[in-house]
Image (cartoon, rainbow, N blue to C red; front, side, top):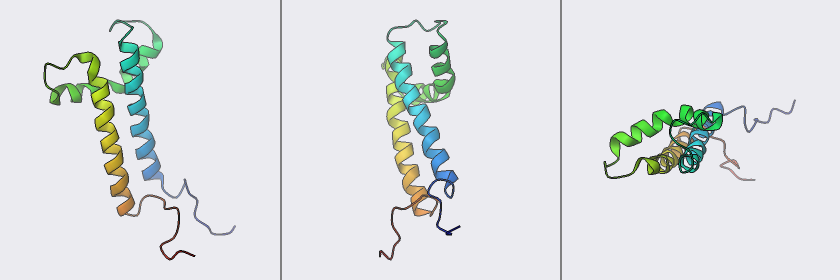
Length: 108
C-alpha cells in the first residue's frame, strides 16, 4: 500500500452531500418535464417516483414562492435553489477541509 489518500473514500461527507443534492436537483427537472405532459394523479411509475423524491423540496419552495407563480414552475425554482445550496455547501466543506483538493498546497 502506498499510503496515498483515496480521492472518493476519504471524503464521504462531501460526496454524499453533493451527490444527494444533485439527485434531487435533476429529479426536479424530470418532474418539471413530466409535469408538463402528465396529469398530477397519473399512475406512471416514473412520475410517482419523481414526486416521491421531490415533494418535500417542492412543498418548501411553494411556501416561499409568491402565489402568482404557477405550480408547474415550482420544480424549476427548486432546481435553482438546490444548485445554490450545493454550491455554497461545497465551498463550506472545502473550507472545513472535508472536500478533496486536486493538488497539495506546497505544489511540487
